[in-house]
Image (cartoon, rainbow, N blue to C red; front, side, top):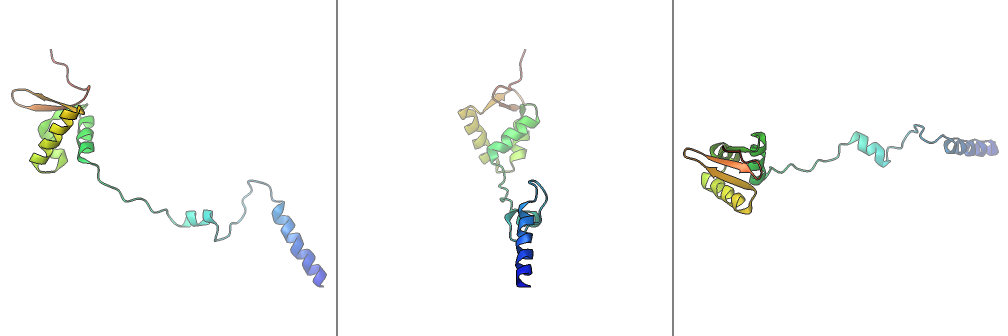
Length: 116
């Protein structure tokens, strides 16, 4: 009787070893793959885009250039801070400021409008 139980136990081990590769086998609850399916991986906290990124996004959305007032509204920071940022970006060559009689255009480098 004990010998029959040992054979049955050994026989079960042989069955699990002979399963074809790629076949769906039940996973134990402690396996890493089963935890991934039941628990969502924690997503990193989203950081708000920097003011520089917001300026560039506003310009990209407007074909590479926009009026200064449009860009300033996008930033939602004090006007003096936004003006300082635009001046710094222009000095570093990221953007170009084109002043005309009534308005100032902020342009991405290389996207300046062609004047006749």
